[in-house]
Amino acid sequence: MTAAIAMLAARSGRRVLAIALTDRLGLAAHLRAEPPEYEPARVRDGLYLSAVDRSRALDEYLKLQLRVPQAAPTKQLSRALNVLVDTAPGVREIVSIGKPIYEVWKDEWDLVVVDAPPTGQIASYLRAPETIRDLVPAGAVQSQAQKLTATLTSGDTGLVLVTTPGELPVLETLDTIRRLARSAAVPGPDVIVNRVIVPIDLDAATVDGLPPGPARDAAALHTQLVAGQREWTGTFPDAPHLPFLFGLITPGEVAARLSDLLEEVWS
Amino acid sequence: MIAPSIVVAGAGGVGKTTISAAVAAALARDGRKALVMTVDPALRLADALGVELTSDPEPVAGSPHLWAAMLDVTTSWEAIVHRYAAPDVADRLLVNPFFRAIADRFPAAQAYAGGEQMAEFIESGMWDVVVVDTPPAGGGIDFFLAPGQVRELIGGKLLMWLTGARLPGRRMLYRITARPMLKLADAVLGGPLLEDVAEFLLDLRTMHDGLSVRAQTIQRHLARADTLIVTTADPTPAQETARFFATLEEVDVRPKAVVFNRALPAEWAAAARRPVRGIDDAAVRGFVRENLKRWGAEARRQADAREELATRHDVPLATVPWMAEAPDTVAELVALFDAAHGLTEAVG
Image (cartoon, rainbow over all chains, first blue to last red; front, side):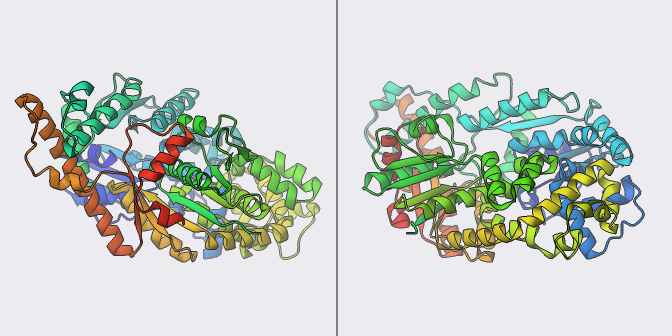
């Protein structure tokens, strides 16, 4: 979906940067691009791609943002720092989420689209600046965290949660919305329901009456899936519902088709 | 006695937990005493296995040989700390904010705790087979890497370098915070936080011997287990599966089979090219044919994806049919297993 949004925005003439926070190969495949590096690289006109590499992000965080002078660390030092980043609450997340926000500050882009980690982890990323502020009473980190929060809540930042019509994804999405709502420091989310099986004009009785074979089996599976997902699509009645894409093979095809569908939904 | 174990790995959202439960239910039906260790099951599945899922294995009502347990991360870490740390260290660690943060968030922690539990169940001798549904952290791969990571974290040169060569006493705390590396960390984290980190690292050091040996045992159990990778034919999980193969090779784990969940019958692809017969109503015939074409295209795509994977990795495949409704009884779990192709061979 990140790739689809980025492609749609680039098509409408904007200068777009897509950033992968955790799954760099996945995002590249959906954009039909080479695996991304830390610095943004051009994919095609108006569309750029980069990936957050944690140790590079940490270096940049130290150098640019906190102005730590020794930040040309030895190998061992930077390994040590990486362990710290892994263990200290909020630091890993703030370093990762910091990179996209520096790109926003650069004023080079009309839109920065971030492919975030799975829904279950997103709250801890977005609330990282707050977590840090609560733990660290003052100093450079504190003011840094405040600046990050200001960008997240500026009204120019949006959050899209993508779900599918099944029990676990929907409950996880609801849980994430609840957890984000406890914090004023993150943008309110929009939901997109993806992979919705679109109903066909056959009722269960008609399907039962079909002669046995693949035609009936496929019709039965389809109508049962539609019935089974109703409970979950109904959870987000106002969210755009994007259809399950039958027979599409590559990530690139899927993303291209989704971006066409998004254009219809949002126009 | 060491029970054989089946470790079920795979990306999130592919039905790993359901398939773990189905495998355990089918083995129990065949008379083997089976334990399934699940992580965060969906409500329907939790209902099927009994609502009171805890980290203590409980017999599943109505299924004589089937037991179920749920991985509880926090409890597990507390148990681990109590086992490997001296009582005063354990008490201090459990209230240390860094320990709390790590227990909740460090992805390897959840995965490592799962490995500890698995080892305990395997070694208890209470079951003929233990089926392990792996925690989703790191796309499921952390479960295999965590024992090594934990060994490196607490036993590695790094921690020794951070805290000094000899095992230091607590009076060393302030001297340690003055080391150059931690001074730099101070700029990142801020002063008060740093003492917590240093204390945490010191306490961790004291657990090294016990924890390191244990982590090695878990690694051996993992290498001995039958590993199944669950995936679907969708592009993203299929890509994850390719990554799994690469990473598992690094830890000497060779997957026994790849299980494609939500599989469609391959013959639908051919059927979609033939005219639909035996339906008199032209409108109904039209809808049915359109529908079969869509699903036929999907069935073809799935077959291609399976073939590509089997060729690339030279691994046996199993397929589990796409069910419109998730199983919510043990009987339905067994039925799902029986409807699969190649799964009996993979767990036999």
